Image 1 (spheres, helix red, strand yellow):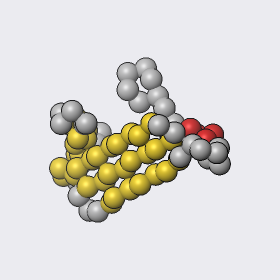
Image 2 (cartoon, rainbow, N blue to C red; image 1 turned 180 degrees about the horizontal axis):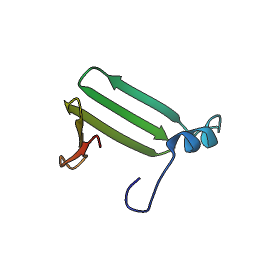
Image 3 (cartoon, rainbow, N blue to C red; image 1 turned 30 degrees about the vertical axis):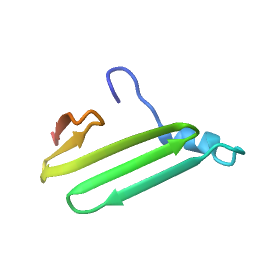
Image 4 (cartoon, rainbow, N blue to C red; image 1 turned 30 degrees about the horizontal axis):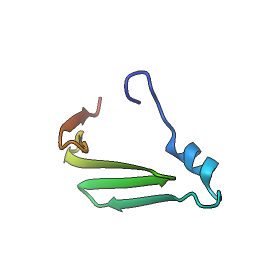
Length: 73
């Protein structure tokens, strides 16, 4: 959720799954310190990358190269 906006990519993928000439795909890379996901539906591609900092924090690498930090509360 970003601000007051939330999105459910699973629902969008389910909605477009099987529609002719409309690609839907999810690609993931997972290891102990990094999680990367690329979600494609139609012409839209969304990339997310998270890096483990410690057992209680991660950072998200934004497409701009900026970083957002999250701490387990």
